[in-house]
Length: 256
Image (tube, rainbow, N blue to C red; front, side):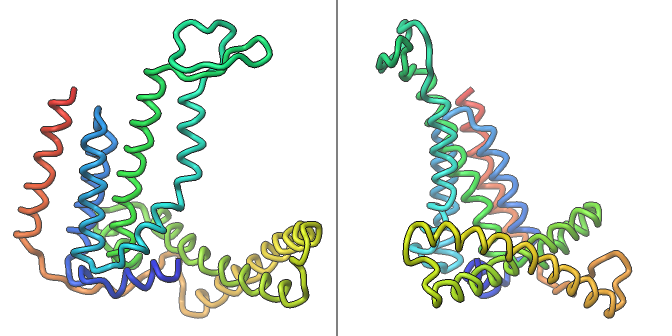
């Protein structure tokens, strides 16, 4: 997470207007989710990978590590779609009888699961492109100009901030436990982990109170204001965006 935030401020696309990057990521995300075939999500995944690695100059190994993060959740989700349980073996492509019930895979369910899996990877890559190339403060500025309610943007800032607070406190507590052999065995690991969670929420609650006091002392009046940096608007970038999105939209229409 810390590296992700660092790349957002130091990538090669940091000079590009945040509205252009936000438009590119969000439009491509919608096109990817609306795709009736697996071709568009695969193109989107390759497109975003190229934008992150080649254009933004972010290491490919780091991007691959980020893409591995949601794989566990995606695999669990698609497996529940691919596998079915039925008292009758009719209609199964692959099946196994377990206690009088048939556990197996129907071919249409397998195709649906693969489609959802690839589509999810494409959508996640769009969000990673935005997160790796655009700092949260610039995203908030663009959303403010789009008249997004203040309560939503403030929640985004606070949640983003507390992700790092959680990580910092959890790392400190775990390091202290490890130095006292808290994870030397399986039993002690479970006990130390339960203590970590109980201490973590208490300390984060105290941190939230400290943060509110700090904001109040700096004349917080119910709205978080950030300094907006001025960027040149590039018609060339919008033209490139249009040239990239139109073929994807046409591909979706042909796929239907």
